[in-house]
Image 1 (cartoon, rainbow, N blue to C red):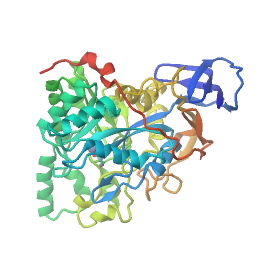
Image 2: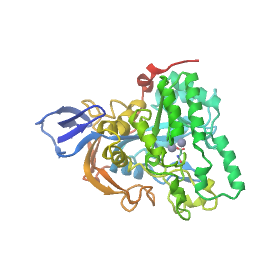
Image 3: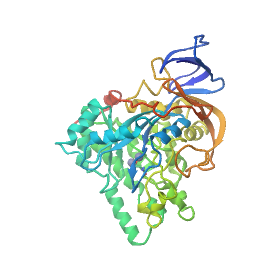
Image 4: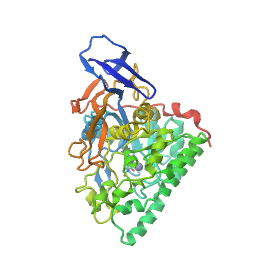
Length: 471
Ligand code: URP
Ligand code: ZN
Ligand code: ZN
């Protein structure tokens, strides 16, 4: 199949020009002015932006969590992602405590196989790292299986939390194999103390989720993660950073050349603590970790994105229906499954809040929604840019069109939207995944099973030069 995209304005993290793109099979083979090459399909992108497909490096599809399972599987979740202009996700496989990571990876391959409409990679959530069994497995993940990043938790004691020795060990292994540790950085031990106190005082409403997770607990986790990474001689990537206190720690590290990287998510850029004060049990929709913060933090996060102290906007897409799933915690906020939906709306939200409202440039928009994640997670230049030889993962984006976000029209398999009624400018019109049109004029025309597993490699080649110390 040969496809020609004509008359578009091509924007990457560094370029901005008008040209045509010729795609042969899955790959971009020619870019130039007024291309006159025989094609099976011609797409007119006149008046539209032509940008690299979005990369969301933080999703939880079909994940058992909080006494239930996240409600998008790889079929529904990747169709929703495609509608929003995301063409690659990196999802999290979970090692059940004490069990095999390789088996966990098989389980996640099975969940995705034949269902995904867009390409995907996996991180591994490491819950146990015994030198005899699990260390060799982690090495195999990084050397042979293309799983170059592992997430470890300082939060959720008794479920996912690991101790500092485990984190330090994992960082050392990642460093040896060109991999990266992603940290859920929140002091879960202290948070649990605060939660116990709240429950003893009869404080069970959703807002206590936020009131028991102070920003200092996140900042302490970030600080510790960076210190451990420095001792291990490894870079570190902080996931779902939510507040200024935590951002300050990343900035301080980066200012002295420590390779600390971080993402934030739309929920921390657009929503705030007041959402927990909605009437009745409504606040449960926003129960996610870290919690939503006071509104003033949002502008600090935008500044972090602009100044490259934050490199990526991911979604942490982990959807639970309000009915039946969030309701598990109707009498106790600690029983509300943590997480929210977002994979479909990321590009629109960041474009609207970032470019349309004058906070970031178009190039920076592409960088934080696609290119940086490709570089940090070992997908670049196959993904994350528009260049000859890259996968033809392309979004034709109408920067002038408006839409209103609503659960009535979204494609995520969840009964509410965190952004219900919000009007945004910037709409995904057409999406190509490895040369195949999967969204055409806003309609899904793809095929579950088209999406392929992408083995990743060489993460630290891009990150290593700034590693400052090794112990
Ligand atoms: O609330 C959240 N973030 N749920 C998903 C799990 C995690 O910590 O990323
Ligand atoms: Zn997390
Ligand atoms: Zn997550």
